[in-house]
Amino acid sequence: MTATFAELWNGIAPIGRARNGGYLRYALDEPELVLRDWFRNQAARRDMPVTDDGNGNLFAWWGDQWGHDAVLTGSHFDSVPHGGGFDGPLGIVSAFLAIDEMRRQGRVPRRPIAVVAFVEEEGGRFGVPCLGSRLLSGAIEPEQAAALTDREGITFGEALGGTPAGRLPGLTGRINALVELHIEQGRALEVPVGVASAIWPHGRWRFDFTGIGDHAGTTSMTDRRDPMLTFAYTVLAANKEARLAGATATMARVEVEPNATNAIPSLVRAWLDARAAETGTLDGLVDAVIKRAHDRAGRDGTEVAVTPESYSAEVTFEKPLATRIASLLGDVPILPTGAGHDAGVLSAHVPTAMLFVRNPTGISHSPAEHAEEEDCVAGIGALARVLGDLT
Ligand code: HGY
Ligand code: MN
Ligand code: MN
View (tube, rainbow, N blue to C red):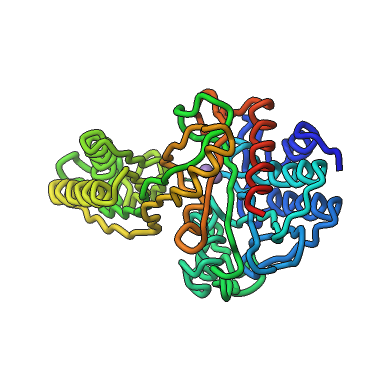
């Protein structure tokens, strides 16, 4: 195999790309199914048999399939709506090319290596992020995952073709380590490659603001029970509370019923994405936002119902592994991130590390997300060295 980064990257670039350059790659939807076929094709070209773990995650094997002490490397294909092309796919493309590099160097791993494509990492279709790695590690029950629905009412079970298999038996014995390469999603990395130290705790909460639908022209301002007011106030309150806490809070997804120009809404449904460096700060932030939403609802004559939809606990990657990798790569920086990853989910069960590839602007979850080719190539070389060291 002598494929280059540019060849593989340009090969997948058009898949699921929207006119604005952003990507619409939702779990098990058409574009992602094409990428899964691409995955199988890349594996076949490298004589790597592919298995599915019954949860929607794909594994391409170099060595015994599910052999003990396997080292996994990879990431996800799915994107946020109109997200960038690097978040996820860079880790999978780099994994195949790192194996090419190891083979070019004549390396023969003493442990099985698998390239993995995790399903529904963004939670962009079924609402729970890292769904595939949560299933694999037993962090979510198969029946609960199967019942998750997308915006068209299709369940994850229907999209998958059945109830997911759930936790891999003997996970900790089967998997020796997981290394996920990912584009950096902040502005802190000023050299081509870095190593992750931690992931901030974060979560998603759904706010249902209910009021009384009515006519926009004939309802006096004092007679209204307008949930849009309570929602608007909550957005500003979340922003204020996050600034005060040194955390982040985002309300970027909203649904309005009936969503008509001349009708006061009866329901406004909105999602809060909140994150903080420590769990206590995060919990305090969310409690403050919920309290302020309820206080405002009292003044607006509306109701608020809050449903936690997902929670990712604070992750501290194994320090000895992170420092060993950082020194192997020439004492590269070790840095935290506010972005969630499948590696974060699995870190509770197996030794896990992340490699970050420099993102010059730090922009992510946007069509503007970008990494320079030479930094991506540096990431592949780094991943090859790490996989060689681990196997
Ligand atoms: O939202 C996140 O942190 C990640 O991109 N899933
Ligand atoms: Mn992402
Ligand atoms: Mn990602």
